[in-house]
Length: 206
Image 1 (cartoon, rainbow, N blue to C red):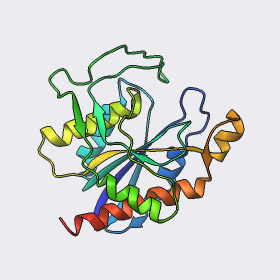
Image 2 (cartoon, rainbow, N blue to C red; image 1 turned 180 degrees about the vertical axis):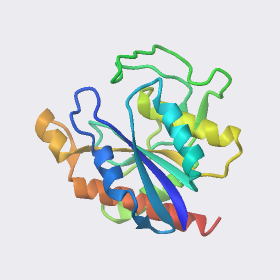
Image 3 (cartoon, rainbow, N blue to C red; image 1 turned 30 degrees about the horizontal axis):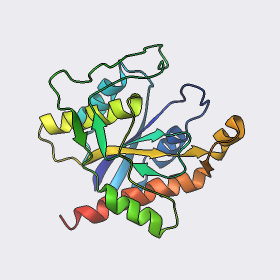
């Protein structure tokens, strides 16, 4: 049995709940396809979230890494294609506000996801879930974590599929925020489970 490190984030900015946190907690310890899920919630902190992810990779030695993030306003599940070497954005939960900062001084401008993102999108659509590949993970914590995870696996020559998936808001958040696209919590969780199952299937044909 392989191990999948699945991470989410704590609540941030005006989002008082984070559906990725709930998904990670509920899937922790479950078996999906070839993987046992090890779930962890990351802090929304530019200075520590990357080291948290890398420490988890070192300790757990996962066979794959999927990080989840909330994209309030999107109406689809969107696996990310690329992470860029920039951190910039609103204040994180510790008050850090980087402006045009590089994530890794000697790192490349970007890293492409090593997850089977096209197959994930096709599977989601087949199951009736709106989905598409996203070509920008922004420059906030989601991009930061995606970049650092891919940088670590690349520089250490680890054959570990790694990447990031953004999900829409839950109905709970939509009720709080008003005009916000949303999915039920169960559909969000089932969509992520479908993505994980695709990861298992794709590796059988490598």
